[in-house]
Image (tube, rainbow, N blue to C red; front, side, top):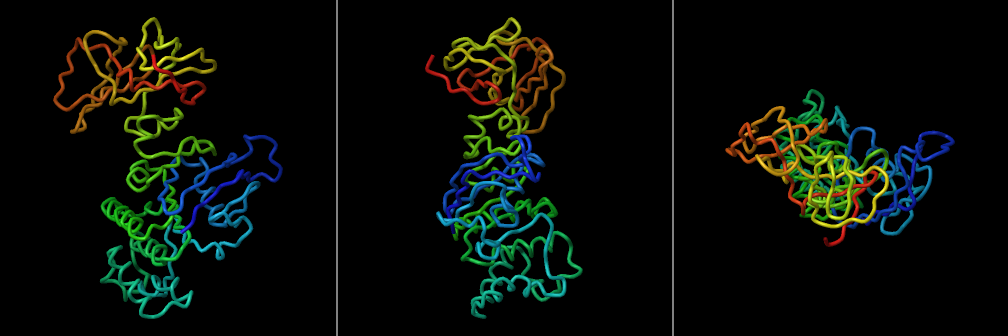
Length: 358
C-alpha cells in the first residue's frame, strides 16, 4: 500500500508544447492517501487514462514527479513499482487454465504453493469462477476473461496500489454490480490503495471513498459523493454528477439575490462584486414547481421514472429540470419554479464562489 503524490505533474503528447492548451494533462499537485479507494471520473479524453498510465509507469510525464510513500518512482519501471493494473479489455493467457492464469502473478514472485492455492481459490470464489478453474481460458466469453483479468489484479496482497482502467466495460450489467461490490469488500478487507478509472458516475460513486473529477486534462474536484452532489466546485461537476445534472443559469448576483431576466432568486448567502461569466447552479432535487412565486417557466414534458417525475421546463431559452416526488400533482397552472436558497451555488467563470452569511 502506498500514499501517492503527484508533484507538479503534467503531460503533453506533443514534442514541444507551447501553451497550457497543448497539455493533455494540466499541472497537478495532489496527495492521495495510503489505503483509500479513488475513482477517476470524467468524459472520454479528459486525461484519466493518461494519469493512470503515468502512475503505473507505462507513460513518462513531460514534467513533474510521481512518489510512492515519498519515494520518487518517476523513472522507475512498471515492474519496480509493485502495482497491479487491470485494463479495459481482458488480458489473459489463452493456453493456460483459469487456475494458472490467476496463479501466475504469485508463482512469478516465488510464493509458496500452498499460499498460491489458497489465494487462487479465494479469488475464484470472489469472481464466481470456482467451477471453471481447470478450463482453458481460450473459448471463454469476453466477460469471463475480464473476470480473470480482475482476479489476477486482485490476487496479490502486497501491492502498493491496484489500478483499474474501466475494467467493467465488457461485463454484463448484473455481474458489474457484483464485481463492484466484491472490489469494495476487497478494499475494506485488505486496505489496498485503489484507483479506478471510469466515465460512469454510478461506478465511481458506489466504488470510491473519494472521487477525482477530471475535465479537459484538469482535476476540478476531489471529494466524497456527498461533496460532489451538494457543493460542486465546478459547473462541470454539477453537470456530470447527477441524473439529470445541475441546472446552470446565467445570472447577475448582487448581495443575496441573483437577478435573471427581470426575476430574482433568493440566495442563502451574500456575495460581493463578481466578474466574468456569472451563473447560479441548483440541483433538480432542490427545485419546486408551483403556481405562484419563483421563475416563470414553460413545461415541455414530464417523465415518470417510477421513483419520481422529471419535469423538463424552459426559462427564456434556458433548460431547467425539476424533480417532483412520485404522486405529486402537476397542474396546468403550475408554471413557476422556486429553489431552496440554501442549495443554490454561485459560479464565476465555472468555479464556485464562497459566499458569506447573508
